Length: 111
Image 1: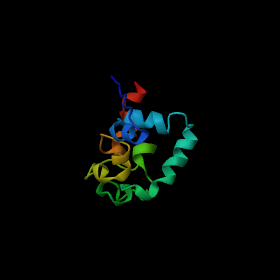
Image 2: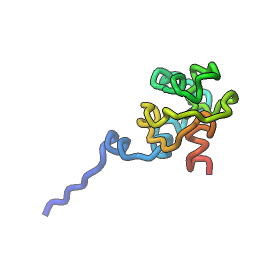
Image 3: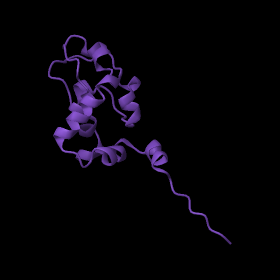
């Protein structure tokens, strides 16, 4: 009898991983400065500059999900986070990063 062991490929593992797992795989060994540079590399995917909540701040390079909440936002007026490619790709499960904080801050990574 032959036994076959199936192992998930990196792509399959990524597809089913939680935010915390993806963060550890991708950014866990990066310095905070490297993480900020990484956020700037995906700024073109960010929806924050089109969001109703962010319209009056003038913050166009926000990436709040990575960099944390805004000092200029006091009222939540709608959220585009669930439509954002960054949120989907990284399996982020929160909203209003602009007022609530970064995904790392909201996750189990800080506990």
